[in-house]
Image (cartoon, rainbow, N blue to C red; front, side, top):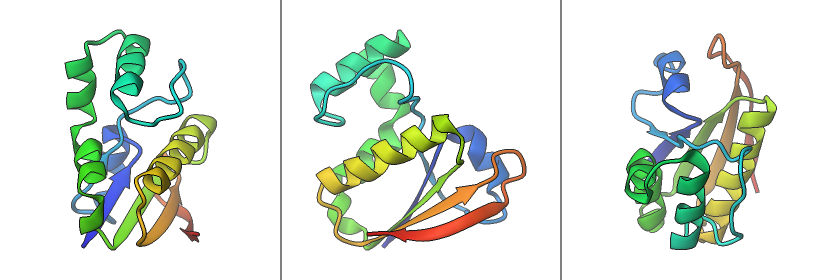
Length: 127
């Protein structure tokens, strides 16, 4: 099974021509601090504090992504859709590391897109 993970809801509107179903990441990892145990309870508490929301609000905003992590074995392909500016670059790095930490063993593809036009700038498989 395939899942598309995008940088966030704003990018989704630009990707309608490429992706029909997606899971928005909806995070801003470039701000604040976080634990090395990505998306653990402690991580979620720290990130909620960084974004000045409750832990429940934080988890609700990331529910789709958390669902993917909790059922990682169901997917044989994950396609990431992120921009290339520093904000998205950091998010991309964290998502890739998280997928590795959750032992994703399938095919991982990164599409780098222009965040203004939605045009794919590059596609590569992540080892």
